[in-house]
Length: 77
Image 1 (cartoon, rainbow, N blue to C red):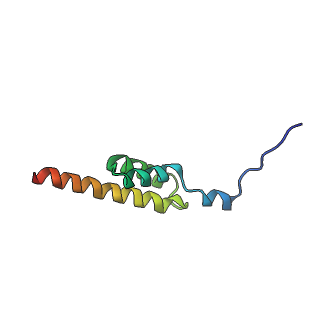
Image 2 (cartoon, rainbow, N blue to C red):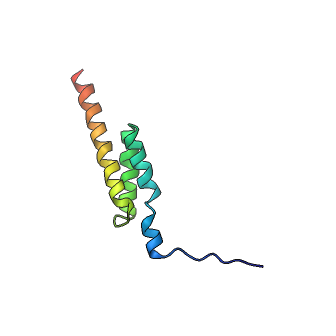
């Protein structure tokens, strides 16, 4: 007896954010700026129109802000 698995519909694919975007936002929220930027740009370059596109942008923007704050701190001390 064989079972076939149906492919997800376009609507189902759009509801799942990209894994790289999730990783990017997670890294940004825990303070890892560089991985957040890298994963955010990878996710945005892959599929900018998906649900994860906004999450990727949030991840790399927060990551850039973290890197800027660290650089400013290091240069002023």
